Length: 412
Ligand code: HAM
Image (cartoon, rainbow, N blue to C red):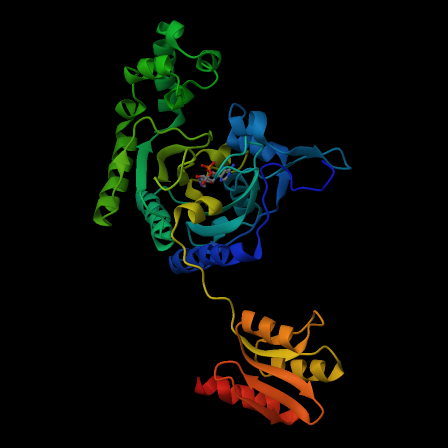
């Protein structure tokens, strides 16, 4: 730590002025996702490390280098959650949610942690809002999930939206395709970046993500997974697309779409915004029909997505809500001031107290800054109530102040 304490790199404070935006995200999520029958779930901030190691995949960047992992006093390895899908799948089984009407439709909103290189829109502690629909492989669930991500981004005024869509097929199809891809990469090894070359066997798909010019050239001629899907997977994908078309959601098929998590099968999607810089991904997700099995749980299909709350706010045109109105500014802190404040708050008024020992002039200035409608100033003959709108003042008995303010509020 430097001399003066500072927040750790890649973290940020949510300041009072940021609160309205974050509340807007929560309100939009609650109304859009709740309106579609999704119910809120929150899982713990930390889980057993194994849940992510198995669920997210041992070869992913997340598991290899981005997790905050620590031992507890009982020598158990725990990890601050880097993502929410594996935990929700765990919870679904731990709480017997398969007995509920399927799919179980769940949404969440909370902090996640990844040890990434911080930059604009990329943090080490960030928030996600997401959904998981577990227990159905119906393509209608995929299509609805995608429309909900689109609706949330639209509601929050995210501009320059692009939706990219792909299908990954099953792990078996992918294994066959992977051999073709590895063979292609091996045949052009000398043109590839060192990083891609080092990972040909570990994660050849990531080569599609590379910025390196030589690698990009090689990838232009690479075989595409989408041309190697089984008939069943092709049909599933067509059913998803037909429903997105019916819902008039614009999308592009991107056969090279890759996401940094291993559990995906079939439908895969990402929503980007050109209002963001390099970190243009607002949200993304896909189907994960084999995740449960990977975790040693009974086979359970699922689909979901997550969007970064900070990125939704950066890319959106959220207009701040007005601060709560201040009905009454009580210019004093003595017992009489507290009696009045308590009575006024019980009556449902928003009251702010003078807490800085200001002069009369300073009190009025502060009341004005707070947007107060009335100011109560304590004098010898009772309370001097000033209407900040009209500038009028009147002396009111202490037990009549609340009624007077309520009447004024009612009239305005
Ligand atoms: P993800 O693509 O890793 O997917 O993350 C989803 C979103 O979280 C990203 O699109 C981005 O907006 C935000 N995000 C990720 N990392 C950061 C970061 N370091 N700083 C700021 N924002 C970030 C998942 O996490 C999957 N669990 C989504 C899912 C749900 N798939 C199926 N169900």
